[in-house]
Length: 306
Image (cartoon, rainbow, N blue to C red; front, side):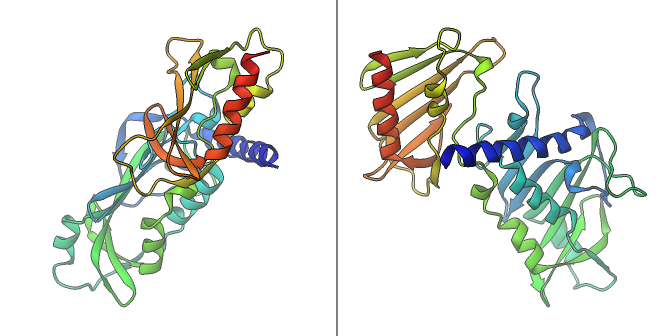
């Protein structure tokens, strides 16, 4: 069931990526707008600050050597190695697209000054949509807009304005803004540590209990082990960082076959009696089932004895 669920997610992932890919890469210089016209599929970056802290920074940054499911990078809070669940991401983008903003002519004194100093804001980079065809957009991500959000709430609304036009003040429902700013970023990722296409790999080096094992895709006819090396699912986000590193359980290094491709290194360490932590290229954000790590380690050892 685990593998079937994983494959299903990847298929959905690829379908959505194909629908998003028509927008292309962003231009070097983005034009600022105070009245953004976009659709969810045209968003290419979302950066959100809440009370002065960046809580989300997700961007479409394809590289020539990457597969389509690697194009999206979630820089905050997890680092670019986390694998995005594009299905959930697109649902989130639709909330941004449909955000209910109502222009108001009357608002409390000091609102404009407060917005100038806003500590909560949402910045979008996007392909500007065709006003006459709401389901289409221009080819390049060439636009940017920042929505500033007031700190106070009145009658169930926040006051907001775009950075480029502080003369136009909006009321935005408190529930809409809170739902966006309080997004559970853990829900935006696929619950897998990494996906490394086998055609990008020259060799896999595995370290377990002081022994080193190697897997060569050109020599191995059976790729079942390779799939299992990426099959341990993420269970939870690490809420409390430990002061001391846990015992090293398993290290897996995917050595790439081209210089421009960075190696991918998974390291599993004991976290407690139930969980092991997993780091991806040095970034440690998630927990996995410790028993699954031990089970995989034993499989690797058996492979080494073949």
